[in-house]
Image (tube, rainbow, N blue to C red; front, side, top):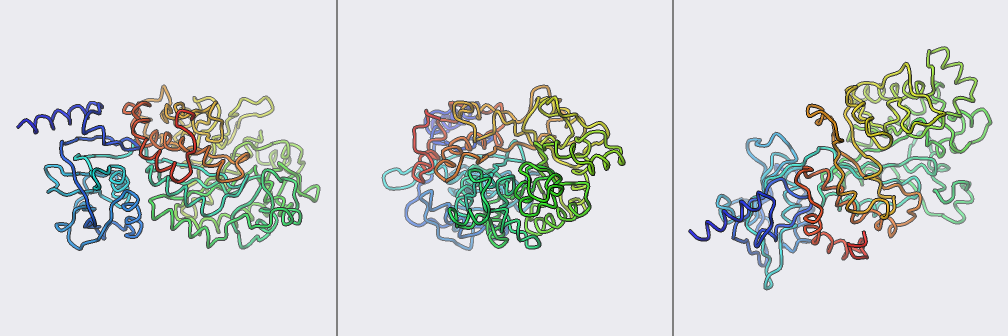
Length: 532
């Protein structure tokens, strides 16, 4: 009776957010929604019998790798009753959420087993990730604290973006990042593959996009293909087969990949390859840095459709990021052809022309069964209040488009929601990982709430979640990349998974120690956490 009372007291304290005694060992990142702890422990020695429900769709080899990294040596058995660890899909859905799960370790209802259950593959994968953060070595054996963890994410969109246009990082680095995203229960990899410095994805119909457009980076913007080959001879783009391999790798880890193909600006690499698709470049007969696509030219629109066709065929996520930010309208303003088109079609501002063009891309994607997302300039707002930019007056962004907020007054989030759009909140002051730690320290990132102040309760579901961005202008290699990303990605992941009212920074720091040690062993972290 005394042990039962102690266990109930421990569970009550944990439910109130207090970690004491046995409960202090339950240190999971991101923080689960609910934990009930018991004064018991599961002890594992030698090989551990594991039942993996074949209905889960989880890859046995991948699951084995996760368990072994946690110190568990699995041997798979055909029947759940013979297993010490049971990984099972619910016979009847219980959660109304494919990402929800329940993990019971030596609980009264787990029959002295470790039992993870979920309605779908995603939830069971997250249960395994949580399970792998529980073991501690005690006297040569693994000890897992008795508990029941009931968990689900606060937001359905939990993203990390890697910019590979400014500097190309390559397949192994991407796979390493995907591994850590999976550890942190992030589900969306936003892949920024094209921009002014370089075009990083093979498009078979337009081979010069990579033959010429990939032959430079942010540090060598003026390099010709011949000059690039002299001082940087290695290939700096992904073949379509490599893209498919990375997609399979990500899918095995429960991560979808959303490619970004920018329109109408950040197009210098593609215009470098084919100057006729640019506005100023076509007129001058040579590529002009910072030019915009001539979206009024049907041949340019056909080019973009051809590119999108190959992209859509590659990426099963069926969501394409169209960019849409920082377009230099000077090129359209100085083009007699574009100005005549605007006048003939009742487009009073360049912002209207951009929204018009973006909507045509959105409609084309929709015809292919895809959804469009873009940075918040796609709404036609003058995001930064620039004197030389006029907000759109006649055009409205197509319904169903997702708006990714990155800059401007936070009221623009509320405005987009009022107009009916779903929003991914990537407020740059909290989510840009390229910013120095002095500007965006770990604690500031952790403080981020994707739901802005003043948003009506009924509108909160329109915030899909958030993404953190790793822009790579000044990140030429993996060492600098890891310094910028780790440990801040962990703080951001918890912002996406854990309800804001359940978060405290000091608690996060305490729970983070296990992952901190893993990242130090992998070489991702090389300084003390206090320095971040």
